[in-house]
Structures are given as structure tokens and as C-alpha cells.
Amino acid sequence: MRQETNPGSLQHAGRIRRTADGGGSNGSRIRLWKLELQKLADELGMTINVCHFPPGTSKWNKIEHKMFSFISQNRRGRPLITREVAVNLIGNTRTKKGLEITAKLDTNSYKTGIKVSDEELRKIAIERDGFHGEWNYKIKPRPLC
Image 1 (cartoon, rainbow, N blue to C red):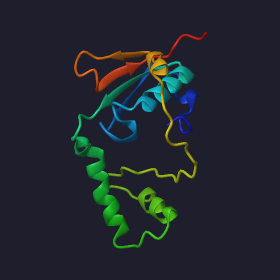
Image 2 (tube, rainbow, N blue to C red):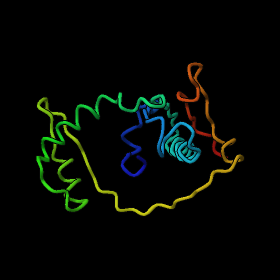
Image 3 (tube, helix red, strand yellow):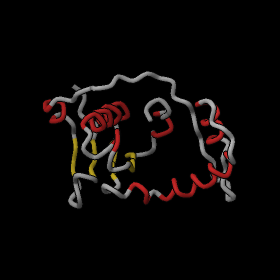
């Protein structure tokens, strides 16, 4: 998100809303996810509202349902022989109503096994919502020191 976001394009927005699955690398219990969101909030000077799908409900994501059927139609048995072929097939998909998919191959390498300490977690400016605060919360930019 950070690499593709132009901070200038967000200058009139007061905050960002992000929906996310309840599990996986951006799950509601993942410390590194929250730490990286804090860094983004600090960098942009904006509050990030996060709403996780409850556990077991990621299949409710309607946009995925709408797009997967069109991706399958676009593929029509073509072999996915490389990652580039797969990304191009996904990126060249459009619905009948004109909804387009943007797909880009991420060739970056990422560290694995990164641990976020209790102290780092305590420094995150998180405000949990009254309704299921474990799934719905705001991460606010921290004051500059």
C-alpha cells in the first residue's frame, strides 16, 4: 500500500479506511500488521480505520466473488506457466459493467520471522471501537518527537 500510495493524492482525506481478512498476514491478531500500519499513519499524518472480517467470514468479501468468476472466464484453460502470465491474465480482466482489475507482480524480497516486542506494541496509537474492538480499530499518527 505504501509504495503505490501517492501522499499528495490523499491530501484532502482526513483518514483511510481499510478492510481486511480476519486471518493471514493482515489478521486482527498480527502484531507486525499493526506496527506497519502505525508507520504508514505516521508517514501520512492520517488516521487509519481498520475493519477486519470476523474469523471464518472472509468468503463474504463480495468484490472477490464478483471478480473471481470473470478471472476464471478470462483464463479459459490457458496454462499459468509463469507468474507473469498469471498476473497479466488477472490484470486484463473486466466485468460486463466495466469494473477493471489492476494487477502488478511484486518481485521484492521480504524478511520473514520479524518479531514485534511488547514494548513496540504498546507504542502503537491504537483506539479500539466499542463494537468488537479486536476487529475494528483506529491507528492514529503519533506526534512528531
